[in-house]
Image (cartoon, rainbow, N blue to C red; front, side, top):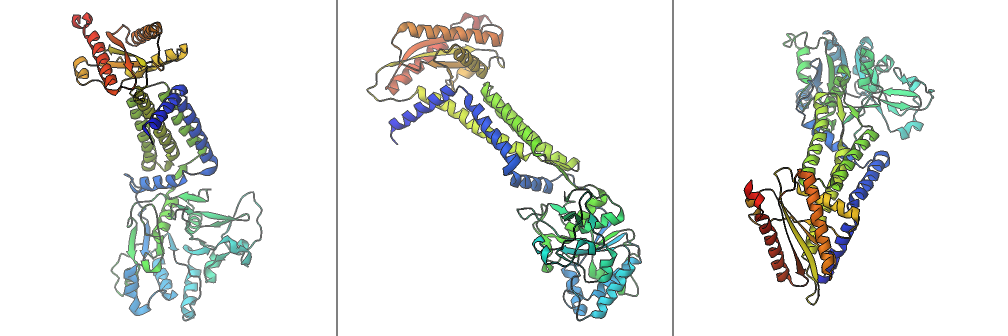
Length: 561
């Protein structure tokens, strides 16, 4: 691209910026507001970021709720599989082992025994073992078993209906229909008859991460309970009405009281028991597996490989203590916060507040919103998810900041634009130097006020700040304000130039007096800057700045102070 084309683009860009007179910030705010409303109602593009935000905050919490000491995991880990392989073979073990385990466990009177093992098929090689397990299950009143909910697409193929399964709930106000339910029930009649069953399905979010636990699934007016929900119903714990609850994780792996299955089982079979005889008294005992070879693991916000038995224990713990996470995720609330943030930033840019102040306030607001979300997870059982406002505000601020930078860059570049060497004409240039009290005379306030005055009078020209003060000026004069005006067109008439200069000086004096209360020391210089001669233009610019500063230097008021 040729230099002439680049210069032409700069000219066009400047004219767009000048003519918009800040309306771009309003147009951008309106565009971003439309996107926020559409995302809140239809697109939900921020959902993925919301999940990620929750994961990071949950994993890095300062305060974790303590795992309930009355919930104990009896873990069938790799050590248990290896220890029992010699006598009972590899997995699955004969059901007699679990029958004996439950019998001995019941002697200590635990509050509940929860199996995280699906006994779906008969053991054709150990019928007596199955019969024994069924007899033990029939005698217990606090043992709970899982069932597996299959894909609803298979419901039409199932001969099982919810009315045939004890323990199924009814959705109030809805008629219950006798429709097939695709589900795998425990093999044992005593277990089914007890009604102490629930699904142990774990449903990950769209990204494959488990953050919620399904308390129930509706089925034509029926409520198919999950295993934790069924335990809560029988034991009298509170069960929320929501289908899913956001899990309040207790921390990393190993936070729950855990004992090895093989160790406890061997102690039960020994003549002289070494373990405490009240070890499980009043406890909620969950029997499940963390062995990777049994493939019962899920990715969660806490771990990439999280044993399913610990996920179940977390859900049971949440219901037992009533401290599951309740997300405050009304799309309209967050849309309102996002829109407020966008329009406040837009007004800040539009009114010409100092850019560094806007940057600081906006950064503080972003940190504040993140802090609110983070504090909600650490100090309460609610999650105030402010991902949408944070994202929307950041997008708007970034685009507006880029435009603001381009606005200054285009104006500055246009002043020093090199035209063709044969171009003729001069630019009328005015340099004004002001010395104000530190912290009182703000460049952004003065520039914004002057632009407003000129726009209101429709004079056809504007002023721009000079971004880089000459070296040493800041140290020599303190809070020095340097602005310049370059006529937008070539003017031949001296009277026209003089009128523009006098008008601008008058406005500068009025504006600075209004800001400071008194007229601050002022120096100015006026001259013609040539087209097409880069060295000549630089020389003229330096001379004008020097003369303006020198005029300020001669002001006797400076020395009288």
